[in-house]
Image 1 (cartoon, one colour):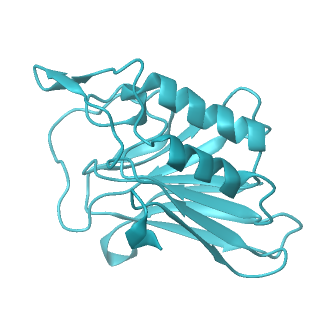
Image 2 (cartoon, rainbow, N blue to C red; image 1 turned 180 degrees about the horizontal axis):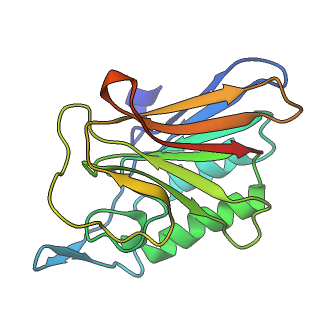
Length: 201
């Protein structure tokens, strides 16, 4: 079925009963409207979107009344950060607001966002209006090379430090409590743990 639809988005549920995790993978490229660059900096497209209406409807359906206790939503570009000058949801402010408004409307439990394509690692935190708990995003990249230039990139939503070493992301879910506890980690070689943020939903 994926080969017959426009766009490569999909959802996958793992586990059973009250220990289910739904992984939602968004396609942020197929439907994306144009972006302009000035001196290497992307300019906001204030009216554009990059999910397409079919994908928006599908996403709302996946989130509405979901029985999963944890929802992992992945996209190739960052959802939360606003300051960085590369590709990000904030380049499409209308679409970014629509995404967080959709989370506030459907209120799925245990949302964690995943992103990459930045050649750094970091964790961001943001609580949208109407959302009963803060949303965390893990950005991890890359396994083989990272940006090692000087300076620290601004991100008002960052939790902990930016990681400029080879890294990968890891989520560990502890089901032993009444509500799942999720450990959001950015790790590296030789068992290094650069950031470890523990979240209870």
